[in-house]
Figure 1 (cartoon, helix red, strand yellow):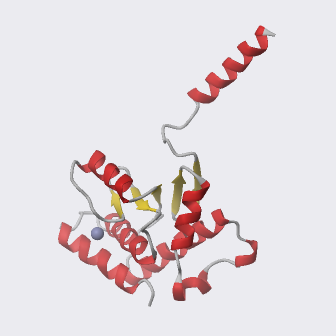
Figure 2 (tube, protein in one colour):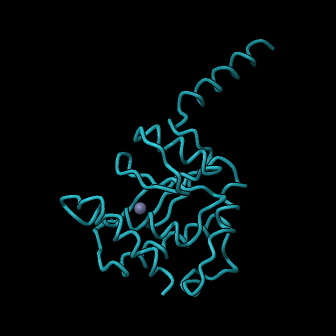
Figure 3 (cartoon, helix red, strand yellow):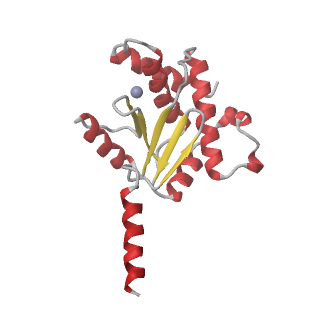
Length: 178
Ligand SMILES: [Zn+2]
């Protein structure tokens, strides 16, 4: 009987050792974004807030979609549309998204990465090529704004000044639904 426990410990040890360094339990991958999150409820909350408006017709056939497929499809549609709005098409555009429970968790991530306060529902950090979004506050405009930062960051060989970066992200946010 004891040897069973020993084998069990060995297997558990192997699983722990091979766990990725991210605390997130789930990760899904699309053409443009890899989205990680801690619980299914977080993905559902994010999906429910992401009304696509006039972009809805661009999503893949709704009937065949799981919630995971739907979120990935939305992120792909938003990413492609932001490229079109900005008329910037960086090659092989891809980035990570980390879903956060609320704005406080987003703030925690910003402080950890940039040592500064933050009061928005999301941000994109070029440090680890990751966008952080509060699932309770994100919407189409918030996501488009942050994708705008991703596109601008990857399009220019020399990073534009902060104000230009921000203006372009605001332009993407404003025109995402056109
Ligand atoms: Zn911004």
